[in-house]
Image (tube, rainbow, N blue to C red; front, top):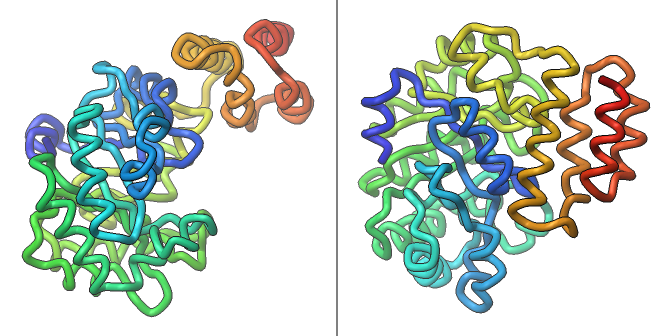
Length: 311
């Protein structure tokens, strides 16, 4: 999958995995706007072992989303061994990704995500377990540094493992999701890893994308927060356009997104769109007032009323 993506695209633009955001509806919207590959939300390897139904529903996807990568988190190799088999049989994604960068406390408590990154021995065992249990291409997502361990040490310790791609969030765990991106460490990663490298973090405009690609020499970009409320960012970057859009155009996409959420998951989960809707109106005239109204919507008609009234 990854080699084909690289041959087809001079630069790979990926929708980065984001817990609570990158569900099927949002992935489909981003694919329509030119995302080359999309990642699932964070899914628990342990849950896939013991109670897989709900997690498989979380990972479910449409053929429109291919190539689609399912991202797992956990800390026990035995959980990953079973989980990747369950995922491979249950939903048949195009790749498996292992998370080594999530800072969320409930993930950290399981010594997973960014916490697992610090344990080089255990991290290697987890990756070996996944590679040995699936024929799907395996990729990983990391941060530039967690505690005393940086991504160069991490990749050096993973040499010899058949990892096809790595997405490197250019911020440390301490930085979280704000602050400058360490482009230099991503550039140096090429000395430790021969597969596809995607730079992640800090991409909100076409200029951001070009600057980070130039400084990192990465094969592509993993775009996360930059796509929230702006799923057309993939097309904008490719065509050198301004990511900002007129309110009418923004509302049109937001409503289409909400309609797709209802179609895929029903009216009961439309409330989950509230967070997306707040991202859509960010920076628009009257955004504060709109956010106050959008956090109260309970159905599509409520959403239409808010957006149409501002159109």
